[in-house]
Image (cartoon, rainbow, N blue to C red; front, top):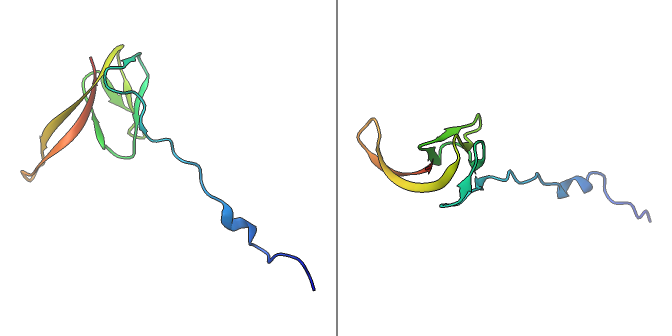
Length: 90
């Protein structure tokens, strides 16, 4: 009787690495120019004062200062409203 595992059984245990998304700097924390504040897919958080978007919607600091999170009511083109989270550097 052969004691060999079936071909292809090893490949099922593989998984991809996590993407390391999320908030990198918290409210009230000091940041420098170019520091990454949030990594995200799409615009879950909006860029506020002294912040900008990267190519993959990463938000980073444009000036030195303190991080500030705020909520803002945004009106859509069809009149519906939603509360969005904004991040700024003051």
